[in-house]
Length: 364
Image (cartoon, rainbow, N blue to C red; front, side, top):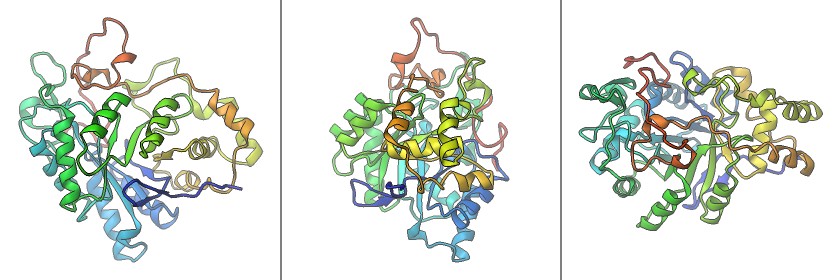
């Protein structure tokens, strides 16, 4: 029972836990406690972060406490962060990671991935990190979500392509600032371009939105062929997603009767069923929670196994429903989901609020 183990070997020889704690949308004041509980009580060894989430400083304090108390050694943790869109110019890549390392109180991260392929929001003029403001604001203010004051749309650095970004990412590995590098929200053609231009350090991870309603089967197969681990964000379909990403007729995965019925058989929650499906489908996953009981439940998925019929039921739920389309950045040439936008799509004005962990303008 439960034949899938909670670790996988990456193409650079490193070992990574399959299940980690996600921190997108985790509130300030709760994130640190969530990380501490996940590691000390839940047994988590992977934490997924990003500087635009605006909570890395809190995560860093929790990690420092765990290390000081001897709960875990640094080499037992797998810490993953992300390069923000504003910092795609090659000279801005290292300052982005240096700011993250300062917040996390670490000398290196285990994985550093390009958060999105498009350099938007971004001006390309200077690095923008958490202390500059993980919020929306005028482009001249230097915040991470810069807005053009004339168009009211996100500022977009259309001259910067991710090829130069990847060159700087590879250098970070050589400098010892990260053990590995990867991608997030890239489409198949963009991943292939990265593979083609890679000089030394291949991408080890692709982190994209994935859940039973958006199974990404072709992309998962493509990653498997190239020995890239496919990692799911919003693996439970992000029930707490912001209003900007919610429509009245949206399905709710954890209320789906098919998932609930499977859970009854194993005396498992719908979330546990979905996460078990991810493992058996060959995915890594980083479910987010700040609730201690749910944090524990989300990793208690190695003591049961879905049978072939149940896996088929889960497979049949695929309908291509994407939560995070983020069409406000579609003016950039490297926007990855153009084929999912309606004909005649007009890029909307940028929202004044973001999906970071804090209120707009909070630089804490």
